[in-house]
Amino acid sequence: MKIARIAVVLLVGIMLVSGFACGDGEESVPTATPIPTPSPTALPSSTPMPPHVWTFPSGGCFPKHLPDAYSGHVVPSEIDPGTIPQDIQGVYWWNSDEWLFWAPDAPGTNLATLGGGHTFDYLVCVTGPCEWQILLP
Image 1 (cartoon, rainbow, N blue to C red):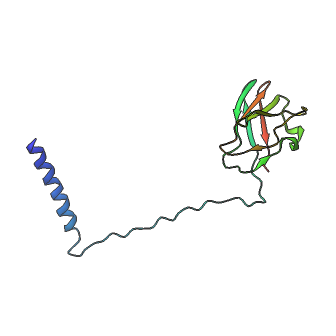
Image 2: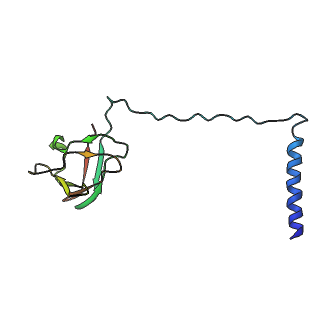
């Protein structure tokens, strides 16, 4: 055990001495190179976000949400009906008090908007496999 300690102390000593010896008598101070901070690139407000795709592998109900970076709202009643797959039965959201829902061409829907980010998670029910491209205004 003593031999290992002595070896470590000698090794550290050699490293320190060789570090000082490399300076050729002049004191060498390393200079730090600043790393530029990347700035986020925001899309201009006139540039629409690409469509968001919800993929459903089979019939059933699936948890879905819009992109976390999306801060706008999609109004389901304004979605072009031709872009909604026939397998979409409804979108449901629990608002901590009651279930709100929207279904294509269904009366009495009370889910007025779909929001993005972490706080808006939806339950989407479909009758079969499909993909739904949702335009994000």
